[in-house]
Image (cartoon, rainbow, N blue to C red; front, side, top):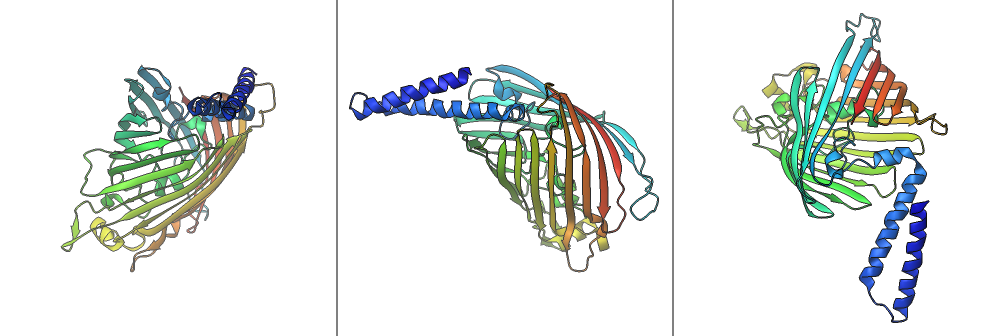
Amino acid sequence: MKARTKLIALSVLVAAAHAAAAQGQDRDSVRISEMERRMEAMSRELERLSLGRDVVEADTSVQGLGPAASRVYRINQGVSIGGYGEVLYENFTSEAQNGSPAGVGDTFDALRAILYVGYKFNDRLLFNSEIEVEHADEIGLEFAYLDYRLRDDVGVRAGLLLAPLGFLNELHEPPVFLGTERPVTESRIIPTTWRENGIGLFGGTDVISWRAYLMGSFDGAGFGASGLRGGRQKGSRALVEDLGIAARVDYTGTPGVILGGSAFLGETGQGRQVAGDDIGGRVLVWDLHADYDARGWDLRGLVAGASVDDVAALNQLNGLTGGDGIGSRMLGWYVQAGYDVLRRGATTHQLIPYLRYERVDTQREVAAGFTADPANDLTVTSLGFAWKPVPQVVAKVGYQIHGNAADTGVDQLNVQLGWLF
């Protein structure tokens, strides 16, 4: 109610200022513009509050990063510590689609434990980083960069950067996305988590958010029939004979709504040759995405595609034949929906049943002389629920129905525990 009272008072002041200006008593247009700006900010805040806790939590992210990864942006100065983690149990069915033995053992994995460490030097300059432990014993650097604000709406970013594509490559903390596992589209086509060394610009307003980077490209020697994931260099002694450009733009003018697209373009041959000819291996990865997270609903849709040039040369370089060839065209998409059934109750807990449907084909087209493996034409249906005793902690139970054109899909039951701070 305090925010609403302030908004009414500001409205009266702005009206009086306009009236005075019209009578020649006050011509300070800068002062009037500032009051109008404050009114707009308060109006947006009231809209967020009316939508409820879901949007308030989502608004803690900055430049597409998750709430914990954004912590350094919200302090005045000094050291910032945050993190997230997840433990995943997977129970696989004994038979595949075609009735043959699945041959897949159940697993219980301390999948990730993350520590975010940042330092804010002043209002213009900060450092942010993510140190990751995977599978309890593999340590890596997920990102590490410096931000320098040229002005309020534009900044420079340099270091080990997350490619700004899709949803989960930047926003992958378990409590803020549905599903016990990340979508296959955002694993094989947008190879989450995908990061490379680079430099670029970022910025935005209350309506638009954008990022554009010059960064290291893929190494085509790692591509395969299942997608682009093996081509990530992760900033580790990365070959940079070829660079790439990654860019993204999102509409964020309505609280709880994200509408946008992103793309990456770069060659991937990294100076290699086949039969005396240079390999270009140009790759284009793109996506279009939409998200609505408000009034208890969590609705999301994404379509992503990739095209790879010089596939025949890359196949020869990698020793791939037959159905193991790299797809020259790839396509994937998913839609999902969830709703907090406890939203209108007295409890602060959240219980969100969800459903996600996904199609992915990493060999939609292949080079002449190669065949597409039907096992790479996938359908995944995920259904389950997420329970949040507090917004930063989640327990998820989900069942995944895996199908493919070869009838070798294996279904699984997953249980995940995740947290962020």
